[in-house]
Image 1 (tube, helix red, strand yellow):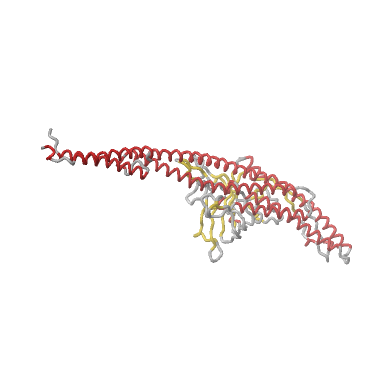
Image 2 (tube, rainbow, N blue to C red):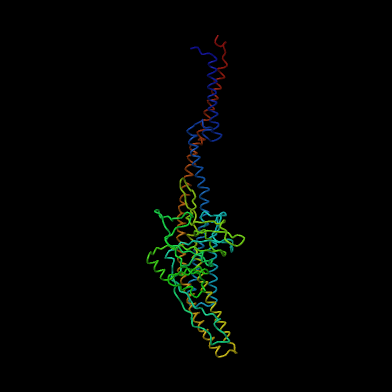
Length: 517
């Protein structure tokens, strides 16, 4: 076969270009530190790089963004729960002090004042927020757990779901002495036929006091109807269906003579104190028929004080604004259903974690209500002491007659009896509060334990993601990054070969046709 100069030149140029291409590729790897510059260089490496980069990007999102955000949210929650637990411990100390019978008026007033401040502080902790989002309010992160100020802009129809376990036996003082029974002009007409005494009553303490006393606004429904799956049944208007409704309800005030002594077959609704006083025969009938009797009580409230818990976070309720005439406007009605509102963060591939603790599971109305009981009992003692002081002042008047003195001494004896009774009521209120504080501490402890277990899971996930992130980074590096030592060696070798090919080509192209003649 005859080898022509053109053939030799073409082969020479092809070899030089091949060496130059190889040198260029190695120079690119050396300059960029990457094995390939475009997918066509090595499709397998390119596809693997895309998958690894996607996985690493997701890991980075979980590890550097989602988990730190979740931990910050949970840190705020943990701090609030710890504070609430510490405050409850302090409240327990005050209640133990208050349950002693050696309190002076100053001691008692100081304890009551401290308990009220601590109660307010607990509810303020319920407004803890992270980055402007309230942590205890479920999905309603833009709505505070408690009212920040007194509110009279809405009327709420609130439905509390209660059972027989929510009924307690409470002692009440009745027949309080009113100084109006004394007439200085006719002291012999002083009527002390109704002496101070105590009665026991079956009580349901609702979540709020100072409720509307409109008889049409109070309803007691028994045993909601359930479907085959155990869910509540609602009618076409969205109202829950019940097996029975109790209608024999008296709307009274706590100052009414029969407030704590309902007649057989009746329930007294005390709007000012937020209590249901159940006749003993009614309680016994319900308890005997079904110890698990459910009692759903619906009532209305239109005035909320600062630090009152918002009903929409705790109960099924309907909120209405008032129109220009001061009446609830049905067109503004907003219905709320009490649901389990868990906020979940995706913290790993196909792994979600609940980060929130709901206020209804940790900060309850009972905290404020047992303090209200103590305040009411303390106020009752103070009121009696004021009357005693007034009667004693009247007795010191040197111008009173023997008949007046006799009447006033009788009143003073009755007031001292009343004070003894109400002192005992106050002491009982403190003793009952000790048990209620401990119950609330248990509630908070359960919430803290649940929160803590989820936080530990989050930390374990964070640790695993840290390891995975390092592993995927190494895999990505092994897949994409060029070995610089090997690249330098290969580059020097390719450069030598390229230089040699140029030298060889220079000698080949020097020959001409004359060299072969």
